[in-house]
Image (cartoon, helix red, strand yellow):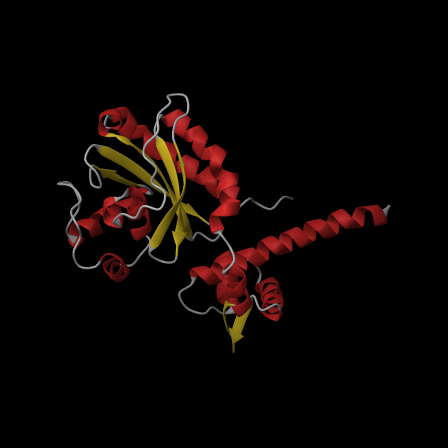
Length: 265
C-alpha cells in the first residue's frame, strides 16, 4: 500500500520545491543589489533553512552565484536565457482571457511584456470579434511612456531619478493634451500608484483613450501591463470611466494567475 502512495507524494514535493525555487529566482531578479539568504527568505515568506537549501542547489547548478553571503542570478541562467523568447510560452496561456475581455468591453485589448528596467514589448493585441472591429496593428511600435497608459504603469514602478533617466529632461508633446512637465508627470504617477491603474485621454493620439493595469509575478515585481484602448466618443462617459478600470484590474489578476499558477495541495 505504501509503495503505491509514494510516487504521488514525491511528485507533489518536487513540484512544490520547483515552485519555491522559481520564487527565489524572481526575488533575486527583482533586487537591484545582491541578497542574503535571510533577505530572500523574507521576500518570499519562506523559512530561512528551506530557502538556504534551495539556494545551495541553485548555486551548484550555476543558476545562482554567491560571493561570501551575497547571492545574485547565476552565469548559467544567463546562458539559458539568451535562447528564450519570453512571449512564446506566455501568449497561449493568456490569449483567451484577453479575447474574452475585448469582446466584453467592445474595445481593443493589449498585453505588453516588460523588457529590462525601462521598456515594454507589445506581445499580444486582440480586438472584439463580434463587432468585426480592429485597430491598426501596434506590434513593434514604440511610443513615449509618459503618453501611454501602459507606459505610465511602468514609470509608476520607478524612482523619480529613474523616470528622468528613462525619459530624459524633455517630455515630447504628441498632442495638445500630452503631459510635458516632469512635475505634472510625478503627480500623475503618484495617482497611478494610489489607485492601481493608469489612463491617457488623447495624450498619445487625438481621439484615443486608454486604461492600463499592472501584471506582476509571484513576488510582486512588475512583469507586464495590459491595456484597453478605444475612441473617445465611445469610452468618454461616466459609466465607462467608473467601471472599466475595475474590470481591467480584475482581468490583470486573471492574467497573473495564468502566469503564476498557485501550487496545488
